Amino acid sequence: MEDSSIFSVPSPAEWTPGSEMEQVHCSVSGYAVLYRADRDGRFRVFKCLKPGFRDKPLYERLLRKEFEIGYSLRHPHLVEYYSYLNVPGYGNAIEMEWVDGCPLDQARLSPAEARTLADQLCDALSYLHSKGVVHRDLKPSNLLLTFSGKQLKVIDFGYADTETHSILKQPAGTVSYAAPEVLAGESGDSRSDLYSVGKVLAGLPGIPQRVIRRCCQADPARRYSSVNELHKALQSARWGWWLVAGLALALVALAFWTVLLPAEPDGPVEIPVIKTDTQLVREPVRDTVYLVVPSQKAPEAPKKKPVGTEDIDALFNEAAASFDGLD
Image (cartoon, rainbow, N blue to C red):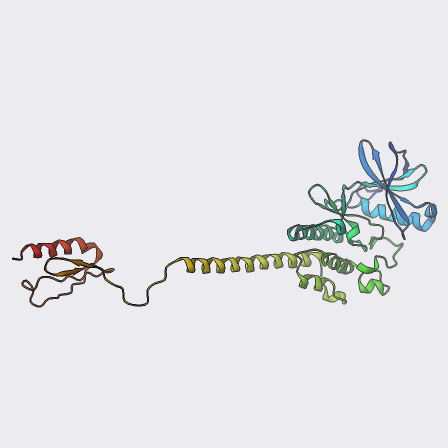
């Protein structure tokens, strides 16, 4: 049967590094050591077994399993796996992408940056789970943040598992980030990854506590059902925050304008008075004009005549004519 190019994995080939292998990390309690070296003009990371673990079938198979899982994944927020090869003097090794960044627990993030990182983590983990892969060791040191652009990269699939692999199914992870069911002896599933994500998010600013509590429920059934549901909860909380902030801003603006704008008078308005030689004519107030005409012409004075504002000039002209007729 012809092998599928989608699922095939290259066989290890011997390669001699073009530059010195620079050690960048050595696991204290684990089995692996990481080196950085130049290959074809680009830095690469080479994950090898420690000298005491080389040629031991269990750890050789563990290294191979990690490569098989990592090589099948392609996502902008997951570290890339390039090849599985043999490096003289170092044994079998995984060639991976070099990420110029720092672990999440060494980064200083603003609340806005933390929310962006949470989105990227959810996006990467959703893709991972859609491929049937469980990471099983999500923690800040396995989440790198690039120095340029602060982009997330999920690394280290050394304890990852899939349904198709039949080896190394025992529980795995880091105690302080592992779900209760994993600590109890179960191998864990996607909901176990959600618990670890909750622990990671608890160390970031600006993440709602109710979301973290839901992720970190002891009972897996009470956690979010999927990473997509978690992502929606994070976005809903963000929109809710903006709504509250917008409402508060509107109330502040309303209070500000209330102070600046003059208040309507509660009592009667004082009417300015124009003095003439014989009578007093009061200026119009709003839509009504009150004219006081000479008593000789109007015995029943004062008369009140409501008019519209458009007739004010005509009324004053009429009053002036009346004054001109007086002796």
